[in-house]
Amino acid sequence: MSVVDVLSSVEGSYVAGRIRDSLYLFPLIESLHVLGLTMVFGTIAIIDLRLLGIASTKRSFRRVASDVLKWTWAAFALAVTTGSLMFITNAGVYYHNFYFRSKMVLLVFAGMNMLIFELTAARSVHQWDNEAKAPPAGRAAAVLSLVLWITIIFLGRWIGFTTTGRPDLKNQPADDINIENLFPK
Amino acid sequence: MMDVAQLADWLSRTSLSVAIQSHEWIIPTIQSLHIAAIGVVMASIFMIDLRVLGLAGRDQSLLETTGRFGPWLSGALCVLLTTGVFMIIGEPSRELLAFSFWLKMLLIAIGTLIASIFQIALKRNEHYWEKSLSRGTVKSLAIVTFLIWVAIVILGRLIAYDHVWGSWSLSPKA
Image (cartoon, rainbow over the protein chains, first blue to last red):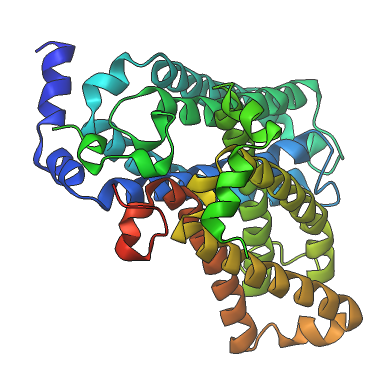
């Protein structure tokens, strides 16, 4: 089965059809996606700024991380679920979209960055847990993480402006929108 | 008296609006910055509310917690106000004629008022508030506050889809 077959089969799935046929589901799912991603970015920023010695420096790194990380994962799960639901409504178009592809690559980079941090700087956390700043490797991971996640937000917004079948990409005032054109047949 | 549609029309012909409209990258850029700042606001409010609920940061006092997140919260709110104003100027009818926009503005006023009152009250009588945390009303207020901000985020995205409100939307029907 080729990629094209997979894409057209998810696009033809019952769930994808239900979302496309509804006037409300896509907007609702996209809103929840924004909710999830803002919580992902905001909670990760708390950890990154702690590593850099910019915020929450009076609490140990481990305390800050353990307060925050479980919520980051919960929010990430919401973002992935809603993101997948949006993807299947127009899989072929998203798959070929440059910004979508770049976003997926950067998400992988963000994951690798986290993994490398866990395997290096985080191994010696007992030595710098109460320091205001993490060692250079930890600070580098924090800067990279902030840059990656902010770029991911930009790429996500650009997907909305460059894929078809979405109301805000056509660069025309709201009163010119024809509902029939918003949802691909 | 100018009605809101006339205001939107006038705004769309100002030189700043025309400048924003003539560069395709400006609106998505402002929206992306707006979303990043929302992340800072949401995480800050969430962490303060978790502290009130006793679910995070219990080793720090309530005042230490608001001191930790308060400046980020107000800083990000300023970014949101600025980017928000540019979005209104750039796409006046999309924003000003959307039901979601006005409901969002109302909830922002309520959310900001609650946060400010809480911050002032806490500074005046820290001891009282720290003790009141076990009370159900304070905990419910923390949950309601967070839900108000969740609704603000959702309404923000729904501005792009004002048809969901049917006849409540002010935009002319196609």
